[in-house]
Image (cartoon, rainbow, N blue to C red; front, side, top):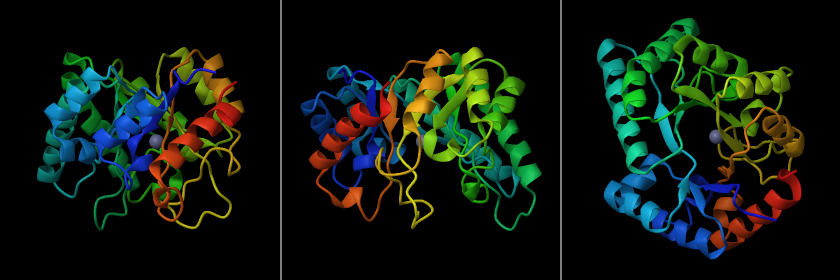
Length: 276
Ligand code: ZN
């Protein structure tokens, strides 16, 4: 079966490889799509990173990440907007499919999640003209509600799509199974997203039971309780047949294994549990 629709989010092997090393390791296994993080790109240098993408004809399924809008004051919000415009420019340089947006949680000392959500919508609206002018789609990634305070106050696909409807063209969603698998409205909202042409990315990993760390204990596909195939089936039925991007933060397990073993396992599980 083809690996054309398998992408590796480079966070998955961030402890083992630099961006260049990760690309070499992916190519050696026939993987030609990646999604780097901005710190990895920065460590390599943007021009060098763009050259790695170009010379190897890689598909970049997303640049992680923009967002983090809510701030305690006007200066903070303005700085976030500036940084997001730079992130758009970096995504353009890397010819990424989209810029993934982790929108941000509550500002320090705030108890007002409504206001944080308003700041997110305002922040997205502020950078959207720059994104549109550069033809760089913004992919809002709803995060599991356990991150509402510190990472993202957009927590369901429905909520993300409501923001998309508000903003119009140039925005869509990144559907990460880790964040949305539990949602009783998931399938209906996937259909809504597909019908609106809003699906920009599909991230995969698994939810382990028990989960030992809120951030750094994501599982390999097949090791947890997410029905990968039923979600993929709904996504494909809705009209999106783009890559599935493996994104695993795993401080105590996969980050400690040899990179080659991690990539080999990603391929094996992608084929055995994620493809239809
Ligand atoms: Zn993700």
